[in-house]
Image (cartoon, rainbow, N blue to C red; front, top):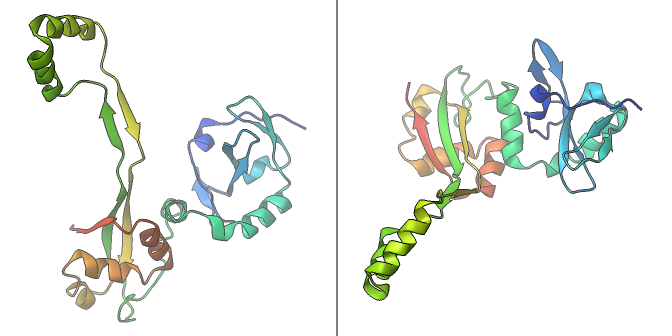
Length: 216
Protein backbone atom coordinates (compact mmCIF):
# COMPACT_ATOMS: atom_id res chain seq x y z
CA UNK A 1 0.00 0.00 0.00
CA UNK A 2 1.05 3.60 -0.55
CA UNK A 3 3.22 5.20 2.16
CA UNK A 4 2.00 8.70 2.93
CA UNK A 5 4.11 11.15 4.99
CA UNK A 6 2.51 13.11 7.79
CA UNK A 7 1.69 16.64 6.68
CA UNK A 8 2.42 19.27 9.39
CA UNK A 9 -1.01 20.89 9.10
CA UNK A 10 -2.62 17.61 10.12
CA UNK A 11 -0.04 16.27 12.57
CA UNK A 12 -0.31 19.44 14.65
CA UNK A 13 -4.00 18.73 15.37
CA UNK A 14 -4.25 16.30 18.27
CA UNK A 15 -7.83 15.15 18.41
CA UNK A 16 -9.89 12.09 19.09
CA UNK A 17 -12.62 13.47 16.90
CA UNK A 18 -15.95 11.63 16.89
CA UNK A 19 -17.34 10.66 13.51
CA UNK A 20 -20.11 13.27 13.63
CA UNK A 21 -17.70 16.13 14.44
CA UNK A 22 -15.95 17.28 11.25
CA UNK A 23 -13.17 19.85 11.27
CA UNK A 24 -13.09 22.50 8.56
CA UNK A 25 -9.66 23.17 7.07
CA UNK A 26 -9.13 25.41 4.06
CA UNK A 27 -12.86 25.37 3.34
CA UNK A 28 -13.14 21.56 3.37
CA UNK A 29 -14.54 19.29 6.11
CA UNK A 30 -12.23 16.56 7.39
CA UNK A 31 -12.72 13.75 9.90
CA UNK A 32 -9.73 12.93 12.09
CA UNK A 33 -8.91 9.66 13.87
CA UNK A 34 -6.22 8.50 16.28
CA UNK A 35 -4.40 5.35 15.17
CA UNK A 36 -2.33 3.49 17.79
CA UNK A 37 1.16 2.13 17.19
CA UNK A 38 2.85 -0.91 18.78
CA UNK A 39 5.18 1.48 20.63
CA UNK A 40 2.20 2.83 22.60
CA UNK A 41 2.03 6.19 20.84
CA UNK A 42 -0.55 7.21 18.24
CA UNK A 43 -0.80 9.38 15.14
CA UNK A 44 -3.68 11.54 13.98
CA UNK A 45 -4.88 10.85 10.45
CA UNK A 46 -7.52 12.36 8.19
CA UNK A 47 -10.23 10.14 6.74
CA UNK A 48 -8.73 10.70 3.28
CA UNK A 49 -5.75 8.55 4.36
CA UNK A 50 -7.91 5.46 4.98
CA UNK A 51 -6.30 2.32 3.54
CA UNK A 52 -2.79 3.80 3.43
CA UNK A 53 0.20 3.53 5.76
CA UNK A 54 1.53 6.23 8.07
CA UNK A 55 4.96 6.48 9.75
CA UNK A 56 5.14 6.72 13.54
CA UNK A 57 7.93 8.72 15.17
CA UNK A 58 9.40 5.40 16.40
CA UNK A 59 10.05 4.37 12.80
CA UNK A 60 7.30 1.77 12.45
CA UNK A 61 4.71 2.02 9.68
CA UNK A 62 1.09 2.08 10.84
CA UNK A 63 -1.58 0.60 8.58
CA UNK A 64 -4.62 2.89 8.49
CA UNK A 65 -7.88 0.87 8.37
CA UNK A 66 -10.50 1.36 5.69
CA UNK A 67 -12.91 4.26 6.03
CA UNK A 68 -15.74 1.91 7.06
CA UNK A 69 -13.53 0.38 9.79
CA UNK A 70 -12.40 3.82 10.98
CA UNK A 71 -15.98 4.94 11.44
CA UNK A 72 -16.96 1.70 13.16
CA UNK A 73 -14.06 2.00 15.62
CA UNK A 74 -14.90 5.67 16.18
CA UNK A 75 -18.46 4.76 17.16
CA UNK A 76 -17.34 1.98 19.53
CA UNK A 77 -14.77 4.22 21.25
CA UNK A 78 -17.04 7.25 21.52
CA UNK A 79 -17.53 6.84 25.29
CA UNK A 80 -13.76 6.58 25.90
CA UNK A 81 -12.93 10.04 24.55
CA UNK A 82 -11.34 12.13 27.34
CA UNK A 83 -13.56 15.12 28.23
CA UNK A 84 -10.83 17.66 27.46
CA UNK A 85 -10.42 16.24 23.94
CA UNK A 86 -14.18 16.28 23.45
CA UNK A 87 -14.32 19.95 24.44
CA UNK A 88 -11.30 20.82 22.26
CA UNK A 89 -12.87 19.17 19.21
CA UNK A 90 -16.22 20.93 19.77
CA UNK A 91 -14.47 24.28 20.14
CA UNK A 92 -12.37 23.69 17.04
CA UNK A 93 -15.47 22.76 15.06
CA UNK A 94 -17.23 25.90 16.35
CA UNK A 95 -20.11 23.83 17.70
CA UNK A 96 -20.41 25.52 21.09
CA UNK A 97 -22.78 26.51 22.51
CA UNK A 98 -25.01 23.81 21.08
CA UNK A 99 -28.21 25.07 22.77
CA UNK A 100 -30.53 27.75 21.37
CA UNK A 101 -32.23 28.48 24.71
CA UNK A 102 -31.10 29.42 28.21
CA UNK A 103 -29.79 26.33 29.99
CA UNK A 104 -31.28 27.49 33.31
CA UNK A 105 -34.78 28.78 32.53
CA UNK A 106 -35.31 27.39 29.03
CA UNK A 107 -36.19 30.75 27.47
CA UNK A 108 -35.17 31.23 23.85
CA UNK A 109 -32.11 33.48 23.64
CA UNK A 110 -29.08 34.16 21.50
CA UNK A 111 -27.11 35.52 24.46
CA UNK A 112 -24.21 33.65 26.02
CA UNK A 113 -21.37 34.17 28.45
CA UNK A 114 -17.78 32.98 28.16
CA UNK A 115 -16.52 30.90 31.08
CA UNK A 116 -12.73 30.71 31.30
CA UNK A 117 -12.10 27.28 32.78
CA UNK A 118 -8.60 26.63 34.08
CA UNK A 119 -8.39 22.87 34.55
CA UNK A 120 -4.65 22.41 34.86
CA UNK A 121 -1.46 24.45 34.69
CA UNK A 122 1.97 23.21 33.69
CA UNK A 123 4.56 23.32 36.49
CA UNK A 124 8.03 24.51 35.49
CA UNK A 125 10.92 23.45 37.72
CA UNK A 126 14.48 24.76 37.51
CA UNK A 127 17.71 22.99 38.54
CA UNK A 128 19.13 26.27 39.88
CA UNK A 129 19.76 26.31 43.60
CA UNK A 130 17.43 28.48 45.71
CA UNK A 131 18.98 31.24 47.82
CA UNK A 132 18.58 29.38 51.10
CA UNK A 133 20.74 26.48 49.86
CA UNK A 134 23.56 28.88 49.07
CA UNK A 135 23.20 30.35 52.54
CA UNK A 136 23.37 26.85 54.03
CA UNK A 137 26.59 26.12 52.12
CA UNK A 138 28.14 29.35 53.39
CA UNK A 139 27.24 28.53 56.98
CA UNK A 140 28.29 24.87 56.94
CA UNK A 141 30.99 24.56 54.29
CA UNK A 142 32.74 27.85 54.35
CA UNK A 143 33.41 30.58 51.84
CA UNK A 144 35.94 28.62 49.74
CA UNK A 145 33.56 25.71 49.16
CA UNK A 146 30.80 28.12 48.13
CA UNK A 147 33.17 29.96 45.79
CA UNK A 148 34.22 26.69 44.14
CA UNK A 149 30.62 25.69 43.56
CA UNK A 150 29.84 29.10 42.05
CA UNK A 151 32.74 28.67 39.60
CA UNK A 152 31.52 25.21 38.56
CA UNK A 153 27.87 26.22 38.20
CA UNK A 154 28.77 29.40 36.32
CA UNK A 155 30.01 27.24 33.45
CA UNK A 156 26.71 25.38 33.18
CA UNK A 157 23.31 26.67 32.14
CA UNK A 158 20.37 26.18 34.42
CA UNK A 159 17.80 23.85 32.90
CA UNK A 160 14.06 23.86 33.44
CA UNK A 161 11.66 20.94 33.27
CA UNK A 162 7.96 21.27 32.53
CA UNK A 163 5.51 18.93 34.22
CA UNK A 164 1.87 18.60 33.22
CA UNK A 165 0.09 20.65 30.58
CA UNK A 166 -1.78 23.93 30.41
CA UNK A 167 -5.48 23.16 29.99
CA UNK A 168 -7.48 26.39 29.93
CA UNK A 169 -10.64 26.69 27.86
CA UNK A 170 -12.94 29.61 27.06
CA UNK A 171 -16.30 27.83 27.13
CA UNK A 172 -19.43 29.58 25.86
CA UNK A 173 -22.56 29.07 27.97
CA UNK A 174 -26.05 29.88 26.70
CA UNK A 175 -27.54 32.11 29.41
CA UNK A 176 -30.27 34.74 29.18
CA UNK A 177 -29.68 38.15 30.72
CA UNK A 178 -32.03 37.49 33.64
CA UNK A 179 -30.29 34.27 34.68
CA UNK A 180 -26.87 35.84 34.12
CA UNK A 181 -27.54 38.20 37.03
CA UNK A 182 -27.98 35.18 39.31
CA UNK A 183 -24.47 33.87 38.71
CA UNK A 184 -22.65 35.79 41.43
CA UNK A 185 -19.87 33.35 42.38
CA UNK A 186 -17.78 30.49 41.02
CA UNK A 187 -19.94 27.75 42.56
CA UNK A 188 -23.08 29.06 40.86
CA UNK A 189 -21.23 29.31 37.52
CA UNK A 190 -20.08 25.70 37.85
CA UNK A 191 -23.61 24.58 38.72
CA UNK A 192 -24.83 26.22 35.52
CA UNK A 193 -22.06 24.58 33.48
CA UNK A 194 -23.18 21.19 34.76
CA UNK A 195 -26.31 21.61 32.66
CA UNK A 196 -24.12 21.03 29.57
CA UNK A 197 -23.07 17.33 29.36
CA UNK A 198 -19.64 18.01 27.82
CA UNK A 199 -18.84 20.60 30.51
CA UNK A 200 -20.14 18.28 33.23
CA UNK A 201 -17.72 15.53 32.18
CA UNK A 202 -14.88 18.06 32.11
CA UNK A 203 -15.63 19.33 35.62
CA UNK A 204 -16.02 15.80 36.93
CA UNK A 205 -12.47 15.04 35.78
CA UNK A 206 -11.12 18.38 37.05
CA UNK A 207 -13.17 19.16 40.18
CA UNK A 208 -10.64 21.77 41.28
CA UNK A 209 -10.90 23.75 38.05
CA UNK A 210 -11.06 27.54 38.44
CA UNK A 211 -13.90 29.19 36.53
CA UNK A 212 -14.39 32.89 35.85
CA UNK A 213 -16.76 34.77 33.54
CA UNK A 214 -14.95 36.90 30.98
CA UNK A 215 -16.34 40.39 30.56
CA UNK A 216 -16.59 42.02 27.14
